[in-house]
Length: 377
Image (cartoon, rainbow, N blue to C red; front, top):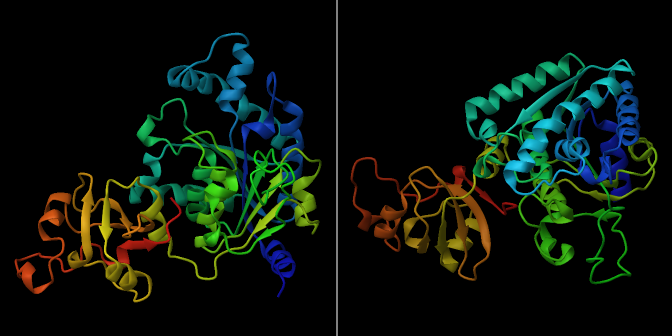
């Protein structure tokens, strides 16, 4: 099967689609552009009429606030959060009117990262989304910018969308961007760079090289979109990165036109639990391991034993998420540690017999069941 045939098949079989749209698509120089929202909603409503379930992740609260505040100076986090508080109700009002005019029910969901960190709250949110979608409502999701503190922020809505793919059990991710798709090289460095029609294995792609480096937290950009697509691929979900401002772009995608960039799903999907474990927390530290331990993880399907650890970074507790790094400094994956940092420093490099048989002693520093290799961080 060619990638075009695979794309056609996935689009035809899609039943639950998560669509993400950024401020650059929705806003103009004077703030939110009502015509762009109308155009987006008309396409979503048409797809909804084709019996698709839609979850919409929409930026634009700060842009809407800027439009109201006009010449007021907005600088720093408190100002942006206040602008978001002003703009979010106006953003949702536009969506409500546009969807209602087409006979659709919309629902607002505002999230902080803390809502998904707790397994109980994660499952509660999943049930809420399931109920809304069963009622044929269209959830409109945004980060709760007005109250989120820095360590509870998703960073950007690309990251939020990647986490919601798992929560909502979507089978397709569509990322609407201001760019025509994913370029084969950074356009800033190569003006002749062409759009990639398909990325067949995003895991092997050098995202930093392709995008000219990482973007800073919260600034979005193509790096964050590809990072979200890489996470989507890990749970078996393909991504379409398409130009959100082009007329009828969503319908053209589903009608089979070659638009933007198609990113293949991974061949083997990781479990929902491992995905939640890896991406809903920031790693609290790192374990550096020797080449033998790296081979055991990557090729042998083994757990990480204390004997293979050569260095410990950070101060973390038992059960915290940590990075696992090889002897060349490359990230191999992330996992939940069975020991606090101080204890690992005491037992690292030691074989199992030398650890003793104290009660509640773990043989593994990080168990394979609590580890995700090739994590997209």
